[in-house]
Amino acid sequence: MKKFIEVRLDIEGLHNWPDCNLPHVEYLKYPHRHTFVIHCRVEVSHGNRDVEFIDFKHNIKQFIAKRWYDPTYGCCNFGSMSCEMIAETLLDQFGLCRCSVSEDGEFAGIIEL
Image 1: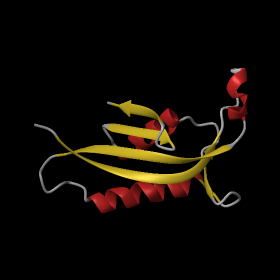
Image 2: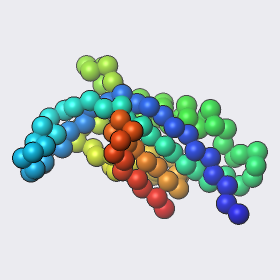
Image 3: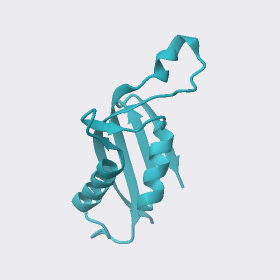
């Protein structure tokens, strides 16, 4: 049996896809805002958890703010990172087994080990 905990965060941020070559969505080349909905899952070894939910979430929020917060815009600026790229960064940083990052809870990039 495997045990996991998962936290969910909503992060206001910008990103863009500068190499977009699809004329019908070429506006994606330019910075645009989303509420990025992030789900981070980590395996735990027992029912009392190796990591407390609140600490886990706070650590992730602090990392995101330190790495991507842009005071010019008053939110995170992920630059040209896709949802999958953001998820992979978080997966690597926190030893996650699964991370999903969605744009406004609608379209998600998912990374799993």
